[in-house]
Length: 150
Image 1 (cartoon, rainbow, N blue to C red):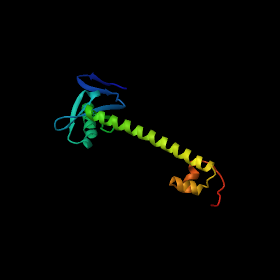
Image 2: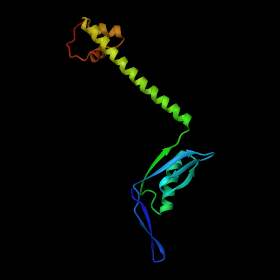
Image 3: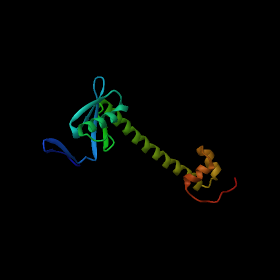
Image 4: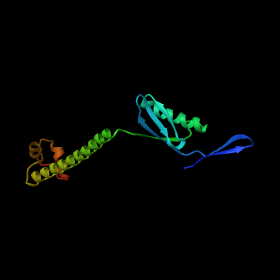
C-alpha cells in the first residue's frame, strides 16, 4: 500500500503522489441516503441509490487527491443491519444443509439402482421401478455393461 506524500516546494504546494492500488469504501444506510466512507482519505460522501455508490466514492478520492477517478481500484463493502445479516446467515446455512441432503439423496438413488441391477433386473425394469429412464439407471450404476433385450 503506497502513501500519498505532500511536499512543500518553494512556497507552492507540490505533490509527489504515490497512489495506493486500492481504496476501500464502506457503505451504510443513513436516514435518506447511502453514506459512503473512504477510509484512506478519511472522508464521507453520500448517494441516493446503490447504483451511484461507486461513482460517488471514486469522485471523492479523485477530488481529494486530484487524480483521475479511473486510476485506482475501489473495493466497496456494505454494512447491513444485524437482523439482515442473521437472515442471510440462516439462508446460507439452509442452502448448505439442502446441498448435503441432495448429495445424500443422490447416493441413495445410486445404491438403489445398483442393488436392483445386481439382483438381475434388466435396466428397463429397474428404470420403471425407480421412475427414471433406463439411460439414467445406466448412469447411476456407473457400469459399462452390454444392454440386454427386455
